[in-house]
Image (tube, rainbow, N blue to C red; front, side, top):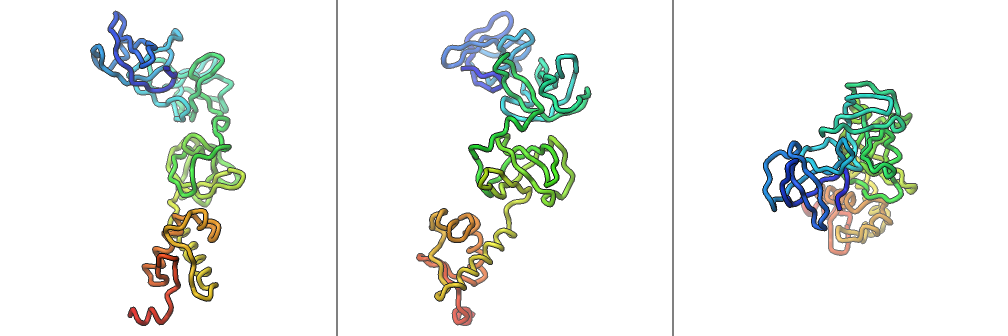
Length: 286
């Protein structure tokens, strides 16, 4: 089934006066106009095309590359504004429509604005919206703590900046995480710092690095010193849930922390867990 706003790889079924008839596996056909093909095509050849509606609202294929695809975001330039809305340059011969109801500020021709592309079910048209937040969902989280993610900068708040995470979830970057100026619609990469119990997500622009690992190492040392034997029955093969429950850290952070402690000869790692290196052991090694 052909989906508007997405790419499909289709087979050339036949050539007609106005272009090529392409067919997908289930037999659905679509026209690729000659002017929208970037090369001559042969029958049976596969072509990667983008599916949209032309100026007469007919489902059409193009080999042009749009600047935005369905359920994604981009910063696009306004080409024209009329009483119905604005029309954006998205890299195709037909401009993308941004209705007045989907605008959040007064637009100016020639300026760029951050939008989301969705399919309007009432009109069966691809439409842009500046109301990004209503397309983000934090009910089912698809990212994990410490994961590297794509970010779009959204609006500024008293705490920091709201962001769109992987174009799916909303998150927050606190002001102290920024070391340069950013603006609404900027794209960057970041890291999931914390997923809260209410599914709110804290994000950082810096890799989850040594500052976190050093804190984890201190916690591990404290726990080791609390025991008479200087021993914890945790190691790099331990289940992540066991590590999180005992030490309140991820397995990834735990492994980095004990690796650093081991290299500094503070602990030794055995099959049954980790041991605090005694002063006698250190003297013997020296």
